[in-house]
Length: 388
Figure 1 (spheres, rainbow, N blue to C red):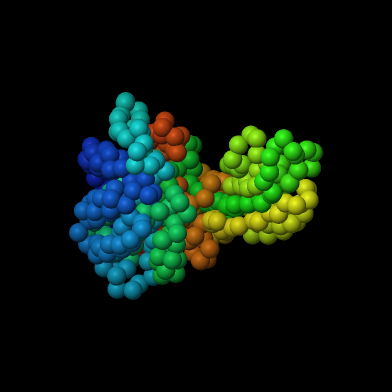
Figure 2: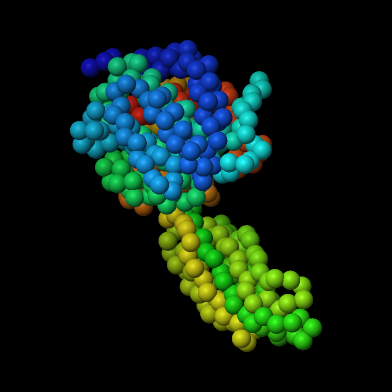
């Protein structure tokens, strides 16, 4: 058994020596264009992640015809079938292949680039945390699986079953989304449901129409106002984010549609809002118009369970050993942590570095957070795996 009483200092020394390597690897990943629909770029991301994994890991590349390749990396103990600690990170970004946001740059305090904080910085943390444990001769002893999926930003359609399978083999999980701006770690998240509302009216010449015409756009306007009234903060937020319809100003619209995003704290809230939506959609405001509501995508909530709180307390203890202070956060967005939570597995998210303005061309990572957060991840992986 290796001496681990001085593990915080040894991990910190390793990370300080590798800081330039970490930033170089971050630059390499950011400069691989990996929008969720760019299979070629995502396949390169899987290759880059595989090449960076430390030697004790057994690597499996999962190929998908319509999605980027994904990587499953396991230590010998996890490969042998022991209950494992699952580490999750995604390789895709929201930026399409033709985006002009295609550069990496640094200043004294920040790194900038597509996916730099969502979540290529988190991937760097994952790789170097495992590398530190391997360097110290500890990784082979512990059952760890790191899964890198390529479709998180579009709802994880191809990786959902893989995440569930690996979660079912796990006693706990860490997800590498960015930490909160005040060094928070995510212990809970809202759930999400996404719907498409289709409205069918009766097209005709606008010059012959009048008040009460069977216009799909007019009906959609009534529906959007009624649906927006279902907002009930902080438990429920509903947003009609896109609307479209009609073929021209001189034609009564025969079709219109809206995309609707709902965030909710618990499953009961989701069911309550869905029932209210069904009633609204099933009650036309204008004769001769019909509406259809279709569920498109979503994730279940990630409750702040006692098991999550105990896992956070363990990470908090490791932070104190490193001279860090971390706090618990309930986050309104969703991630693959929601999928893990649905399997009843304790999970923490926001284990990556700190930054902000993700999903925008101003996205950045705080460079000073990369080493401390990676140290915290390494110690948390070790301690969680040894105490499971």
